Length: 141
Image (tube, rainbow, N blue to C red):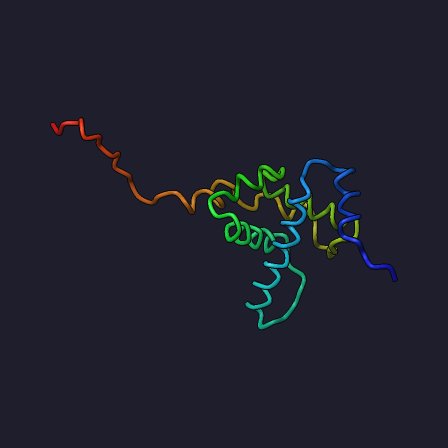
């Protein structure tokens, strides 16, 4: 049996669907590993297939751990602007044998996952009401 060459298959995917950069696919693969490890820990080291929603959560957490407040900017640069883009990448990889799916898995699993602004920018915004700083020239009434 011939081993799957990830890089060669990825080149085929990129030629067929140029919407997403190479880094998006690498991020998804690493994020999937991250999500799988988190779920495995929570399930007493039981390895199982993860759902689209679980993958989205793992990708969010992995992205924030890697890029912090720049996560949305980085993902946008790679062509990822919403959760549905993650689904497109997953199914591109499934169609080329890089990932597997169950009968229950579909692109629909990635619809309405989370808003990128809420997921990637909101955690870094200051909380509470901010009072504007006064310049030294400003006189109090």
